Image 1 (cartoon, rainbow, N blue to C red):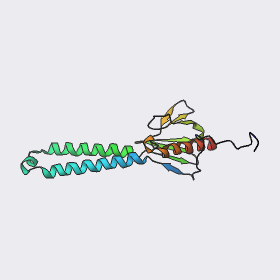
Image 2: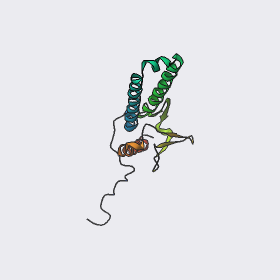
Image 3: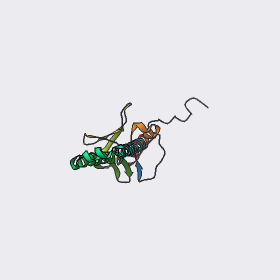
Image 4: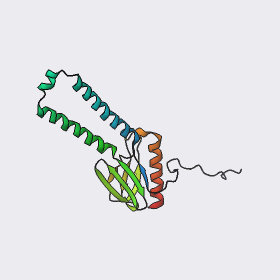
Length: 160
């Protein structure tokens, strides 16, 4: 083949598999570890309580029991906030859920999706000058997080 006739190599930052919309991304590693740790903590606390002698159990006041329950509930609420993070791409735009905050973005609002090396999650640069963290895609998920960002970049290019 003559020089220059080879098809150009695709830019690895812009190559993505097509996805059908709506498409949802969620962090797998965070969900698995969070609920595993909650379960392990629950089992550990139960075993400690069962191991107490009746005399020690009798010394635990109602206030202490309620405080323990409130702390446990607080842990579950925080873990639920972490595990409900997601990104949903649909025809009208992008929905970003970080904890208990939800942002609905139109494709035209999104200028760029950045995922700097070493960052825990990508950021979306908006036309308003603001940026949004995207906790629904976590670097701890490895290659799937890079693939998700490439797919989102392609969708932004095609739909904005």
